[in-house]
Image 1 (cartoon, rainbow, N blue to C red):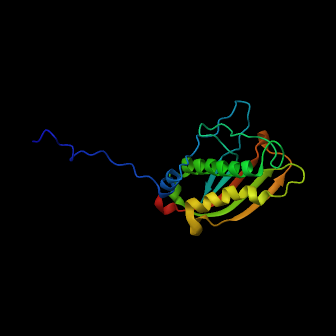
Image 2: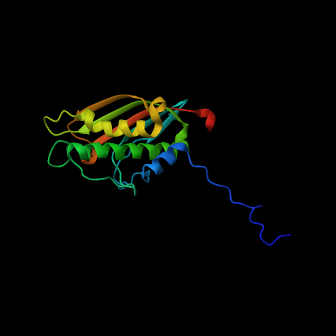
Length: 180
């Protein structure tokens, strides 16, 4: 028997999803679960899977460690610029993807993005909510492509959001239950 028997016992290679490979190629990472204080009331569930659908509660922008990402405040004011709002929407989308990964086990199970509901914390008179939520929509399309990523969308301006987040985004996706 050979002393060098490494070919017989190769460790199993971890298979990464196509979506995670795309995120890695874009130098993007999914944040940890949302870090909250003990007195912070969280939604009943960040994700609810029913049949071939997953409903995702509203998510805000997060840092990789799970804390809320800054800047906080109203988009279109001195607090948050349009570009910062756009970036916040991208970060909120990564937060949604993190929840989907934890809830589904594999981001490739998403077979269609159906609906995105974006709420932008706006300064009085700010009307470019669609430009802000484009940060979410464009990232979904970049990662999933047109066939899976195309979705219906709402981009509403609101007077306030929890914790002064610049954006809060909720979504609904169709999932493939055959790839479990």
